[in-house]
Length: 266
Image (cartoon, rainbow, N blue to C red; front, side, top):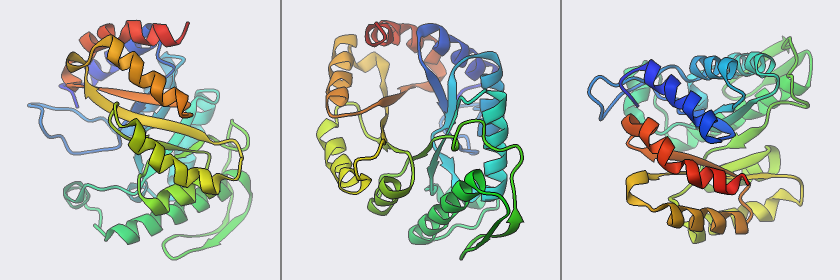
């Protein structure tokens, strides 16, 4: 959350210069905690970034109940082509009751939102891999639906679970391409406990393990940050998504983290 879209845009350009491989943006509408704050629509903003950088782009996380799965699949497929295969879908069920109600979405119990999310992911996978899809679910129905163009990435853009709950993790292990666990930078043991459940169900197939972490860059040394990143790599983490607080100082903080990024890209 920053004062303007222009500032977020500058941060994205600087992130590429610093050496980041990708950029994610949260799928929220409400602004809190910043005076005249700004939260651009996630997928519109990611499309703009993909056009002016070589960064991979994705949502962290896309709130599945906010968009019909047919529309979301179409949006991401379009960006997949525009970016020549640099898009990823990281999904969740949503958690912010106030935001749902403020923007006119029906707030449902946790179980129902998760049920809805998992059904939507099943449908999106079919839309990306099949033609003339007919689907009769509890929440979504389509008849003879085909998406054109087909995804640029084959068989489809990576689908990553951004949820931490047990049902979400087991579903991810069985049906999608990876898991982006939200943990603090020093919570390696907790991450490993959650990862072990996925390991039981993933069946030895190729699977992306990610960490989504956030911290105040002014409160952690570069050496400590290197230490914890190494620890996550040692337990099998493939991708680390870093959010530095406060958002309003990201341009300065990107310069501060730059030596750490370069260290791991040597």
